[in-house]
Image (cartoon, rainbow, N blue to C red; front, side):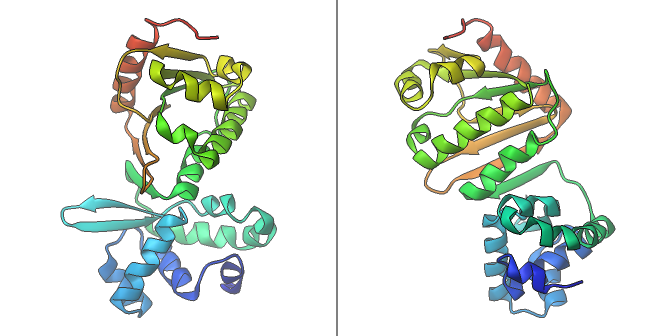
Length: 247
């Protein structure tokens, strides 16, 4: 495999070593990665942090250890669209490596805005018309221009896929919403306002529940579990159905 292509799209040689190692051996703590890559412990931990921020590696906590896992290689396309053709040349081989060591987990974490944008886009990439997309909205972070711009684009993506979007928003956020989003967009998103104080930043789509935090150290936690998703869906609709469409 021509690893130079991965280097050309912005990955360092150390990042490539760790990423390929994770694809080959599957979910792993840092120890086996140090052994397989031949890199020093401090270098491996620094590289893992970089890959987490780029959204191409995730981890879960197992006891006191972090267990790292390479995400689907197609996620790389989210930040290298301008080099998509070159990356597609090696994508089948990367997928082959992933399949040899792949173990699916129900929990993933994404760190940083770019990784979070990628995670949110990824869950609806194959969305079908009339599928429910339910969201307990956020508050202050909607005043962040980068996040506002993302959600404006994200709303269009959901509309193009004809998802049945429903958003529950706390009443005190109304001024922020009406400042940043058109009434037409809010109407399409089926926004309803409520005085109920609910947990913020929760998205329910299919069998997935996503917890979004846009604070000083932003992150997304993605949990895939059918029963849990159903419970959150029922919880959402119980309050959403008590309110009226805002627009």
